[in-house]
Image 1 (tube, rainbow, N blue to C red):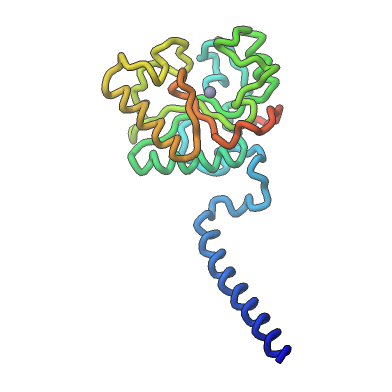
Image 2: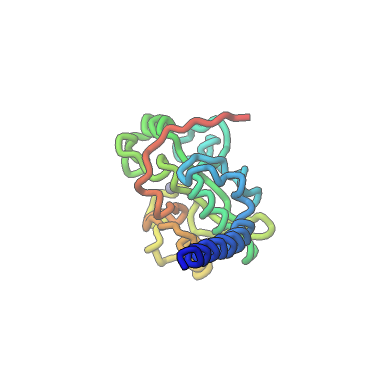
Length: 222
Ligand SMILES: [Zn+2]
């Protein structure tokens, strides 16, 4: 009697194992792009280009074409925490389905770069105080716009890093087209786990990235 019961338990355990095996396998294969990183923690810093080639790069701080008038990055790479990359790739897929692509202005910003920026412009209205750090220093934020199928930037009403009320989501004295473009960007980003800043149409940060530590991760330039 006891033996039969043990056999039933063993058999049901085996069945459970079989079922879970077949359940787990197909769901993993859907995320093929991440399989090489199964061992990586979601908070690991990674290079976006290793996960997708579908982004347009316009990394303003790797040039002098920014409000600082200074090149503060040695090269134009987009590093972020793995979870931010995953969410951003998913958001980009949504844009691609509609005929658009994400264009990147800024991603993770090492603390040393934040300090450099603060030395150039020590005004908390324009640059986050490195003592506090920003979500960009935590690897959870991106500054972005979108481009159409021809690579033309969508009209968002102001350039990136425009310091004025016109850059705000609340500002309504804009063309219908601009308002609808900003709404489109916001809708897709929110759907994919991001939050927005009321005052900057280009800024989005991963909701789950707020508690990550400020970091001073370095990367090599080719
Ligand atoms: Zn930002």
